[in-house]
Length: 134
Image 1 (tube, one colour):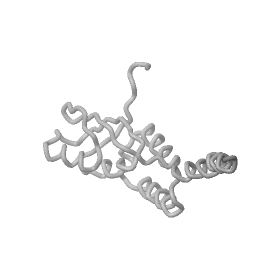
Image 2 (tube, rainbow, N blue to C red):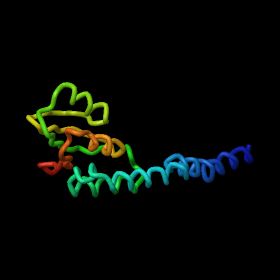
Image 3 (cartoon, rainbow, N blue to C red):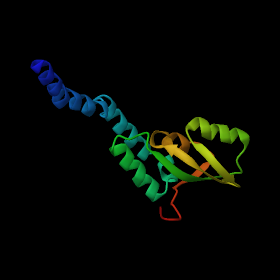
Image 4 (spheres, one colour):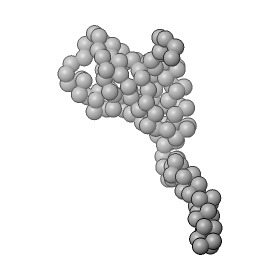
């Protein structure tokens, strides 16, 4: 009985923490891929569609390995959006919340930012700013 308790204690002290540490990390093969994709996006003209704050926030998310980090953002389009454009935005990963003329509000994850920025009708992507303190 005493040996069983010691075994359980050792499992909690050594095995479980190492499993938790491994679960949150990307594999060695995935990390360079994400870094290469990040560098590739930053060298495109689509990168210049992001405002400065959005660029900084996106770079931080990618550096942290958090490509699922959501961003609330505004998108200015070159034309009034059509039903087809709404579907295209959705397929690219943009969750449209509201639309007024050529301005859309919604959210997008870090991994989908390059796909949304690459859409031909997207002119500017601006990180949203809360108007009231929480």
